[in-house]
Image (cartoon, rainbow, N blue to C red; front, side, top):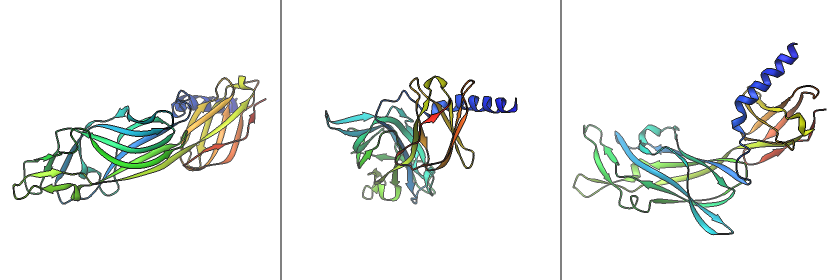
Length: 263
């Protein structure tokens, strides 16, 4: 009875975490997050109005194609909130695997600068960013089923340019880009497919990601950070519960594991 209750808990947990492995993603896709950080500047606030984020994708069949990231948090960001290693999620999306060459930030009009010791903010003019957008080179290959973070390191000190002695300022963004794979995944097959097990990927610290096998017995657990894991398969009679141990995942690839027989 205790063993049956234990695996019932595993099954419930798999239901709760199944969204971490989205089998409805297009075949051959990668997940991309765009995060914003900043190098410190000698100002009280540097507020940048970001309205849209787009990625230039290089496709062999149709040339190049700008894609707007569908999960974005548009708004005014004070860059100085994200210094000393802090960052914020700006946008994310699932993109076709392949090469991406540029990112474009479309800026709004509500950009401002607040000097130290001055109560009122000053407007920031962005002549190059308000129409076609601010374009940055990234030149990265996205591998299928891998999760990436594109970090935009905004240099506030270099990006603020005084306009002579007028007391006015231009925003000419100086941004360093860094793209890094931050998670891989685990792929495998269970037999018989009719067992339809719940699957838990468990780290040494007991962090858990889960999902299910499909109708053919195949599964893919995405978004698994680099590390060593055990994989538990929870099913119901007449099938057996099984476990794989010492499964090593790296950030830049999907780990293929042996087929698991649940008979």
